Amino acid sequence: MIRIGISIAVAAIFWLVLIVLANLFSRQPAAYRILTLLGGSSLGYIQFICYAITVFTLIQLNEMSQYLSHQFKGFDLKLLPEEDQLILTPEEVADIKLSVIEIEKRGVLYLITRFIKHACTQYRNNQSIPETIQILDGQIGNSKEEMDGNLNMVRFLISSVMSIGFIGTIIGLTSAIGHAHLAKTDHGLSILTSYLAVAFDTTLVALLLGLVLNYFYQKYLEKMDVFYAQSKSYVMDNLVSRIYRHASE
Image (cartoon, helix red, strand yellow):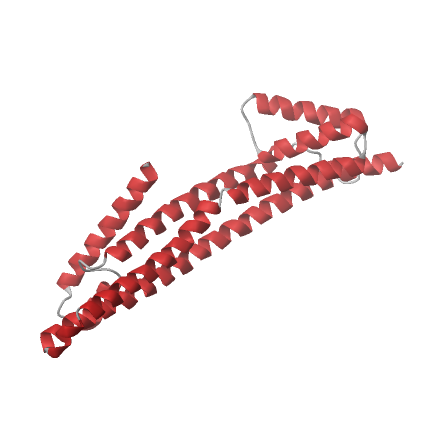
């Protein structure tokens, strides 16, 4: 509710600023047209709704991006040995698991600690490298699916911005058709064209906002893919592959 309130407040302030600027630049056709296109009039309520949804979606993506940034810090803990040509015995794998558990008891919780702990546990159970890799893949895959599932609302909001823009177009066209009789006079014609302008302005603004939201959405997906790829490489290179070399000997 706090995020919704912030989003509505920011959108309302932006809408008010647009209206004030539109009134100030009413005698400058180019500037006035741009401001009204962005919603700087009493008919700009569709743009206002699109702005509120956009702000809310950006807040959601920013929070999720900060969570991922926090998860990247887990690599700085140096939980696994990174020396070249180092091999690990089963006892050393058990020690790694214990050290990870001790870190988690102190409240230091990262996804990478979970992946390491499960990989060590699986190897301790049957000392099978293939099954350890399978468990690691499963843990990373499940975590990624869970994080991707949290994006369902974001995807819906992005598509809803587009839909609301088209709804605004339909409302504008319907209003224009309903006032078609005003085309008989010059004043009425200007009113009619204003409805048509609003109709197409809402779609244009919605499409532009959709591009912005899709950009940040794709940037987040890229960051998420990089994190899980690095997580798998980190555990495979510094834990699983070292056990494999030791076992092969």
